[in-house]
Image 1: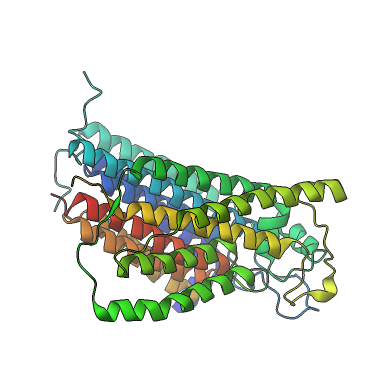
Image 2: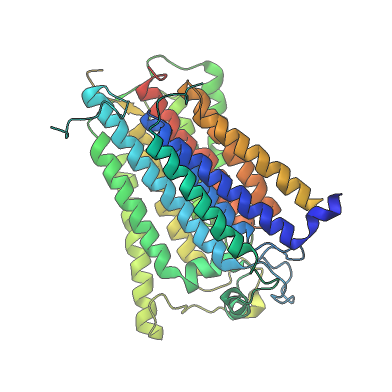
Length: 125
Length: 235
Length: 79
């Protein structure tokens, strides 16, 4: 039974459906939660699901990691380095934006004392 | 459970409709994936041998896509600037009591080890997995350990400002020197032949740029962590 | 065997993420979010991407969770 899961089409299907399910879990949290920090946690979960989709779609079982070991081997049959570079940049920028958002939430709490997004209606008059 | 509350019907129906649309799109996508995709990554792996660097991801991040790394450093700088602007009124450290004796002694023992590991990951970024971003954040976590365990420790302001300015300016200066020597912004003007692959001094300017990126990321993360740990005066 | 491990890890990550957003206390939600980060590091290691795994381990399960813990200290336990 375990050999059925090793075919490349089945692995790609598992990766795609799993990361899309994680994205929808994050979307559900974004739409229904009321505390401001839980909304930030849901946004972070949505970002993580997309990183998994990018790296998982490029996986074949006979690939090696893109690092050489001795100087006279050649770069064949290796993993693709371009998605790795893009995901590195995306992780760092996601963290920076999250830090800025959390600092805004902390400062707003110190000014007015509210954390529920239904009560933040100063601009609504 | 905390999600059984009055969610409006339009939200749930929009959620279900988007789920149906995405699943239809995924079904069409999954039926048309070929087994071996010829991408630009294969061509870049062959071109990597001309730079003489053992880690292919480092070459892509620093040399082939070096301009994107410069933009990413700018985004980090703007985020640290925004956080410093919002939270800079807080002056006092929030830790009220002297911490435990074991914590003080252990943190003094662990701080140089973690800092040394962070600098190792930063410097050997072109030979093994690692690089500037990872090493910089490890150095920042060593500074955080000292901030938690000692009550009156502050990151010295002038030293951090000088480090960050030096790193940011020298990145652009190295790019301009490449423009003068090789007619290419961020070109590789130091010797980088393939016979040196695997040694520490190989790859031309690629390890130098990654160390500069590591210094800048480390100092910015230290500033962000210190700003988040303080509290205001009248609370 | 690899495919079965990938399937089990995905089911674990989705369960922990769903449990993280329906908690009533804020400290439990942040700790479960760190579990999501740990699961993705394991998955990146299985997909043969060592640079991305190291970056996600340091930033996702380290600094990003630390920022949420600072927010917990300033905002209180879902008061």
